[in-house]
Length: 244
Ligand code: FPP
Image 1: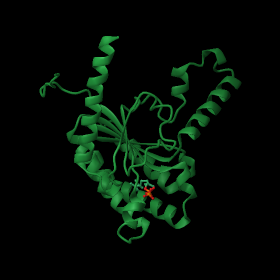
Image 2 (image 1 turned 180 degrees about the vertical axis):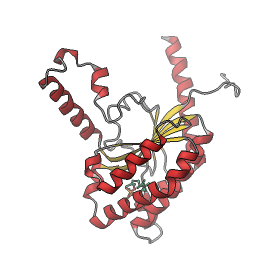
Image 3 (image 1 turned 60 degrees about the horizontal axis):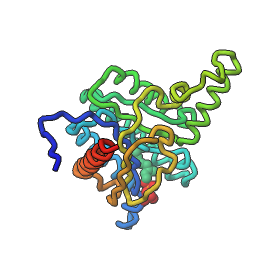
Image 4 (image 1 turned 90 degrees about the vertical axis):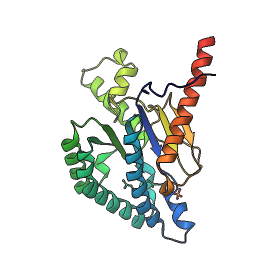
């Protein structure tokens, strides 16, 4: 039986989370869906606090998908309002905690005042190194890959790139995530077991952990349990590979 050495530092992980179940959390209490999203912001803060105590160097959170634009206008408005609230109320704390803040997604689709707030937050926190927090906003994996293909085609058209020179490395450099490392672990809450257009290219080798907890109830213990699951799988696979 293999035993972990508690003194042995773990390699810090990139954890990506599909934060799902706000609506169901609210419905179960007879509350409007938007209240579920509000509670979701609190879970976001708890998750970040927990991540800072765990070997996690990056957190990427699916906060608003390309498909979410199709929700009722009132819900989209409330999500944008919450995003403004989040950026306004959390930025100072994020900076103080050494968190680098980033956004991936189709920024042009976001309201201009939010884009400005995002740019300001990214500039302010760009040298922070404790943890990188990336919000995926107006994000879709297929849209990201399509945009990368368009960028590649334009570069070829301009004569800056030869088609033969396009390899995985070049494709990656055109993705919204740029040079960022791939997620090691993708967690989805609420019992759903789908990727829903999240980090399609980047999660090619990720481990997936699906939890039944609804996002507004997510807390440090859930994050820690997902990491334990990740490490237990890593140990098993290590043994298998050793036999090959
Ligand atoms: C899924 O719940 C959640 C989202 C639409 C995105 C996550 C949003 C938050 C955590 C709150 C807002 C955060 C920011 C930073 C703006 P759902 O509505 O799909 O739940 P359901 O599947 O139960 O209906």
